[in-house]
Length: 144
Image 1 (cartoon, rainbow, N blue to C red):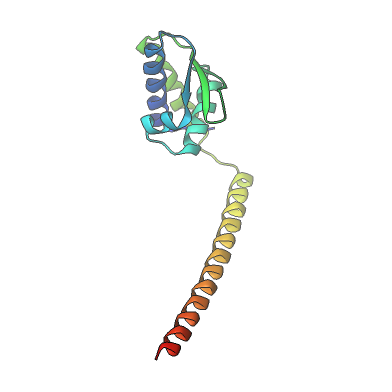
Image 2: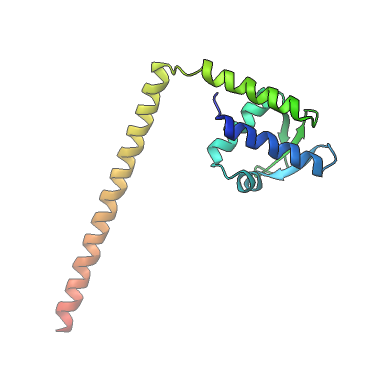
């Protein structure tokens, strides 16, 4: 799984900061708060947490409900170790630049399905608008 260097660094710095605020202990935080602090989309948040967990930066366990997670920052708070991991992630991104044709085909299929669903929704809304306009015309004709 790939993550841009800037995003990766943003999450490492965020978890480092939050960990310091909780005296290096395990802490519970809402996923929405992480999103707000880092300014990323929910899908990027999920991907980043998976990457950080795989790299051994954070330990993740379920929180009080599905909107919360319990995290434990596993790295020392030294800047050098953070920079090493960031450069390691950079190398991984460069090595994984080639995307398989199968994954591209799957992405195209998913996008095509989404486009078809959106077209269907547009058609339904157009029909609803047409019915409403016809009803308005009838009401205007009756008032004259």
